[in-house]
Amino acid sequence: MFIDYARIVVKSGDGGRGHVSFRREKFVPKGGPDGGNGGKGADVAFMGNPHLNTLIDFRYKRNFLATNGNPGSYANRTGKSGKMLVIQVPLGTVVKNNLTGEIVADVTEAYEHVIIARGGRGGRGNAEFTTSTNQAPRNSDPGEAGVELELVLELKLLADVGLVGFPNAGKSTLISTISAARPKIADYPFTTLIPNLGIVSVAEAKSFAVADIPGLIEGAHEGRGLGIQFLRHVERTRVLVFLLDSTSGDPMEQYRILTRELELFNPGLAHKRRIITFTKTDTLDEEQRAHIDELIEAFRIELPEAQIFPMSSVSGENIDPVKWAMWNTLELAREEPLELFHQHPPFAASDAEEELGEESEEYAEEEGEYDEESEEYGEEEGEYDEEE
Image 1 (tube, rainbow, N blue to C red):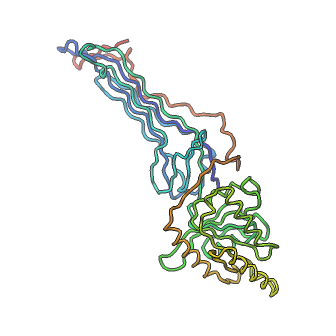
Image 2 (image 1 turned 45 degrees about the vertical axis):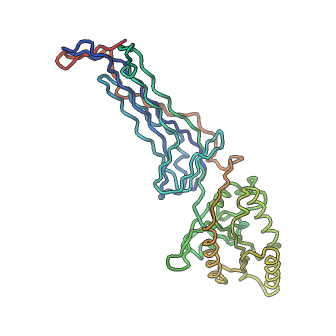
Image 3 (image 1 turned 45 degrees about the horizontal axis):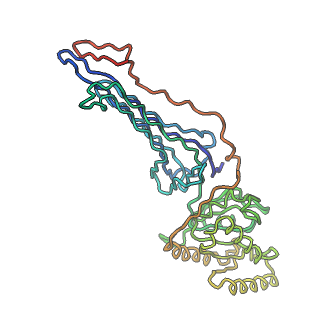
C-alpha cells in the first residue's frame, strides 16, 4: 500500500534530575557535597532510508518517545544520557510542524540524520552549587523537560521528470515503454491510483528517473479526483511532460486546464521546463492526423519555446526523440536552482490523515534511581550520608 502522508507525535527525553548527597568516609571528616549531575535526555532525529518508499509504517505507530536521562548519583557520578531515537523515513520526506505549518526538515540524502527535537539537559547536583560562602548546599536542579511536537510527514517522490495528463492519456503506457516500470494499464480512467517510478536510459551513463503521476482533472487543486493527494509529487521534478490525448475533443483546452491546476496548487510549478506530447497518434485517421498537425502548429505559435511532439507508445512514433528531449531539457534544468514552494494541505487527503487516536504510550520510568533511604555503606569502602 502506498501512503505518502502521515501525522505523528514525537517527544524528546527529559533530562535526569541532579543528586543531593554528602561524602562521609573514614578519616575524611566533612567530606563535602558530592551529588552528581543528571544525564541528558535523548534527541529525536529523522534519517533517510533509500530502501523505504512509503510512509505506511506511521499509519500504525504514531507516538515516538525518546528515553529520559538517568538521575545523578553519589560520588559525583553523572547520570546516563538517553540514546538518540532515530526515525527512518523514505528519501524525499518533508517534515512539518502541524501547528505552525513550518518546515522543520527535508530529508533528501541517504542516511542523513536531521535532529528534530533536542533532549532536555540534566539537572545539576548539589556539588555544582558549592561556593566559598555555601560549602554545604542542600539543593539540586530538576532535569529540563524534553520537547513534544506534532508533526506532518509528506512524501514527495524524488524524480527528475514528471508525466502529467488527464486520466487515460497514456502516461502509464509511456513509462512502461521507456523504462522497466510495469504499472497497471487499462482502457478506463483512473487506472493509476499511485505514482510509479521508472528509470529511463538514453545512452551509456545517461539515465534519469521518471514519475507517472495519477491523472488530474479540473478542480484537482481543490481535491477533486485524486487531487492534491498526488500533486505534491510533481513539486520535486525539474521537467514536466504534458501528455495530451489526440483522440479527445480539444487538446488545447486540456493543456490550459492542466497548467491552471498546477499553478493553483503551487505557483512555482509554472516556472518548470516542459515538454508537450500528443499521444495515441497511432489511432488517428488521415483527417484526424491533419487536425493534430494544425494544433501542433498553433501550439508552437502560442508557446514558441516549448518542445512539441506527436507520439505513440504503441507504434513507437517519436519515442526516442521524446526521451532525448527529456534528457536534454533535464540537463538544462539541472543548471538552475530547484525552488520548492511547500504549502500545508488544506484538507484531509486520505484515510492516513485521520485524527490522531487518543491512545498514547506511557513514558518509560527512569532507570537506575538511587535509593537514598535504603542503601547503606560500609565504613571500609566509605560512607555517605544522604540529605532528606
